[in-house]
Amino acid sequence: MNEISSAALIELSLNLTKCLTANNRFDDLISTIRKAITCEAVVILAVKGDYLVPLALQGLTNDTLGRRFIINDHPRLAQICVSNRFIRFPSDCPSPDPYDGLLINQVGDLPIHACLGIPLHFEKQLIGVLTLDSLTTGIFDDIPDKTLDIIAAITSVSLNTALTLEQLERNVDHSKQVVAALSQPNGIVEQNVLIGQSSAMLALKKEITLVASSQYNVLIQGESGSGKELVAHDIHQQSMRNSAPIVYVNCAALPDNLIESELFGHIKGAFTGADKNRAGKFVIANGGTLFLDEVGELPLNAQSKLLRAIQSNEIQAVGQDTIINVDVRIIAATNRNLQREVEKGSFRSDLYHRLNVYPIKIPALRARRGDVEILTGFFIEKIKRKLGIKQLKTSADVIQYLSHYNWPGNVRELEHLLSRAALKALSEQKNKAIVKIRLTDCDNLTNTVNTNQLNMIDAVTTNKGASTLNSINLRQEVNDFQKKLISRILTEEKGNWSSAAKRLDIDRANLNRLAKRLDIKVIKSIN
Image (cartoon, rainbow, N blue to C red):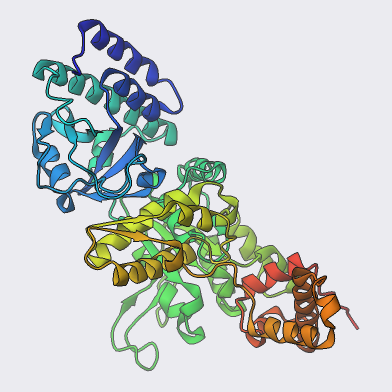
């Protein structure tokens, strides 16, 4: 029996009202619902275009928060979304459950169970979905229809208010109705969202919201794979320029002789191969945002031309005398330390200060405590669709394993690792409804010893007797070898970090981090 008294409904209504002022309002909202309706799992999801985003959940694995459920891929969710009222799914319902394999207290496939889905409407528009699952079959059958209608109405109003408050908190300058905002895709692919609930990510999101409403140029700095492009898109989407385009320019991929044409455009006949007029990125981005990725890779002569355009808001196409006025906001990104590049003379100081009006530093994944689990859920849901897998999940030891790695390649490295692991898992579990990524499917993240280090270890074991081998500190021996090798190469390359990185076959940013950890410094002298 799961009957709900009138007193319980009144208490539910009062408690939902109190939840709206709390910081964790969505968690409080489902906790209040769960007190009224007994169940093993409850999830509240917001509608965003053609997919559902979990806002809060109980009874399911935490990585479910990172998943994005495409409505048409899940028959039960699709049925709820098109319904005007709640749906009690029969215990023998043949449609797959979207949470199959994700219930915390249930290993493997979900057995016969009770499932209740409630569409949440506000002003005749679907804004969310509430789902409840119980391993006790028929537990929802005794709840009167009218009671469920009342719960749906109360929850819908509470959800709409909570979403509106959240949107207003994110950007007080934008008073748009959050229901409409969540119901419309933002024009950027689904993957372009910042996933994470760590304190470092919450601080980053606050910085983004703060600067988005201004017209300031922004310089985004962060390691490779940390999500600089996502931050740029988020700033643009929260700005007053979001109805205009954000135009992407990969500065590292521009040939020196085509940089001016790419940025400012050219007219027909301006140079060999210019067989027609072409608009530059500044003109295309007029009224919107120009995103200069890897801006630290621009050569000095291109930097001076970019500086003039930013200073004057005027450009001149190659081969044309006419001046064109543009209104463009600049967001630049780099994995280099531009201040250090300025000191070295490889980046213009005046351009640096024009770009660095509002600096944003993206935290490395290793500094985002707890985000690996949520990101894992986000990526495996995405990978599941690519591979055509009915359900994909990870074993508990995989999350723990991934959470203890320092991720030098950041979020991009995590996604690629999970893609490889999923492929391996699928090859061994082809006929299973739920494919599970196990520890054996993942790369050996602790095996970071390279060929040079292995050679060093061989030398150590050759030169030391058996009696002393047991007392060798392998980590210290490896660190000492790395320090000697990197110091020697830097000396031979006269302190040029790029050249040293190429010789060592390592990314320059990773070399800088490794050198910092090993306390390697380059001191240049002036003769």
